[in-house]
Amino acid sequence: MPAPASSPLDTPLTRHAGIRVPIICGPMYPCSNPELVGAVSAAGGLGIVQPISLTYVHGHDYREGLRLTSRLAKGAPIGVNALIEASSRAYHNRMVRWVDIALEEGVRFFLTSLGNPRWVCDRVHAAGGVVYHDVTDRRWAEKGVEGGVDGLVAVNNRAGGHTGAHDPRALLDELAGFGVPVVAAGGVGDAAQGVTLMRMGYAGVQLGTRFIATPECTADAAYKAAILRAGTHDIVLTERLTGVPVSVVRTPAVERLGTQVGPLARWMFRGRRTKRWIRTWYAVRSLRALKRSSVDGTASDYWQAGRSVDAITTLVPASSVVEGFADALTAMERAA
Image (cartoon, rainbow, N blue to C red):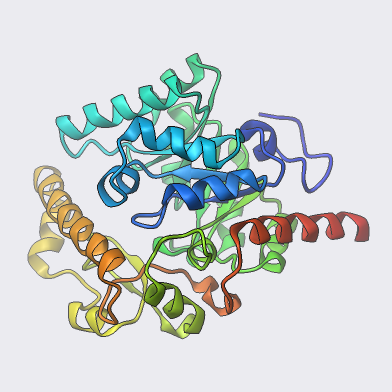
């Protein structure tokens, strides 16, 4: 583990990732387009490539998409998200190839989600890189640390997309004893909220919803407008998109869809064999629905967003989000 931070801008995360500001643009399906990811990295944060978004939604060849993102980052580091749950042998093989290509292209920061990160850690560490792992509670953190990860991204109950069950303080208390840096994911719509989490002891913050409401994100204007006008009361959790709770903006489509899976699906999620089938079915359905939402931009879409929407009222450049956080951390240091 890196040495303790000497200033709010010098943290284990900034040293692991080789970045100036301890802020991550979290991987988002379908919103992680190269222009957004590159802009965050160019500004001093860390943009994370989401491979399925890059290839399936935005239509890039994977290797060329990484190269484009790196050019837009102006040579600054970028990261790659590896969704490692082995839903099928073909998917696992494709993810292995994506990790290998990213390493060939010079990527040295990886964010794993789901599954056992051991094989990613083995490959990345051999190349001199680092791996952080998305977790929602202590149980998943234990699996990640046992797999060799270098840090944890703690997804709390204010996050957009797949959300956690714990508030940021309780979650940090659960994870603080593992001896690795912990990054907060969820509830950061402005710099002040980010500073609050850093004061708690987090090594950095990961933002998603705030970066959707930027010019560099190519999400439909209706999606961005929904974020700007939404309040916390407009954010609901639904299991009907992927089978596990997803934080979305309440829309007519979400109202029709409902928030809980049916008894048959719930039974299938409990079975060792049936769990894989039902997860695959939900994954395919949600990929299609979310891709359609990103293209159509109608009022009936499924728009993922977190409870940070209360603090997001205007579209601002991605660089302004990063610099605003850096300025706030500097001010915190001066006031200390």
